[in-house]
Image (cartoon, rainbow, N blue to C red; front, side, top):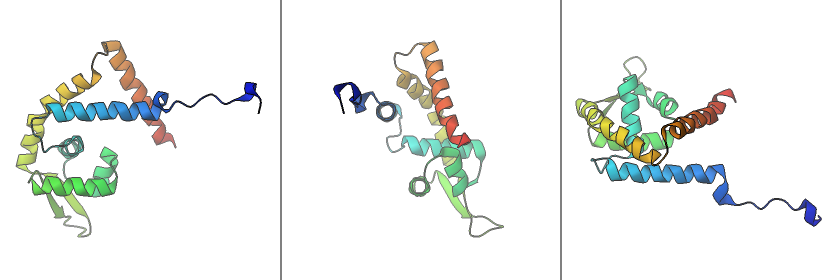
Length: 150
């Protein structure tokens, strides 16, 4: 290989995956700093919101809605159940199927945390102006829309 054919150097810090991971780490830090319930994680909040939006759901439905893997979801649901924020019951028609739903405490928790969710999103955007925020959301949605095509 001649000098002219040398591959471009690979700087992992400039790669999309690394930058997305760093952005997510930043978001997680912001979440932990601003959510008043120190025992509530970002993933648990997503699951609670999904149950609020879709009602009682099977594990498979929660996985599809949240795009969180099944092994992780099971642990999240178990922790939410231990805090009595969700109830887990067998489906009346198919006893093999488990249905997860918000308890009254879980519904109150979501309602109380949503304003903080908005604040966390605002802080995650940081110094981005309105056009940059819109562009970022558009590009991220376009990027993940490719998942549906394949």
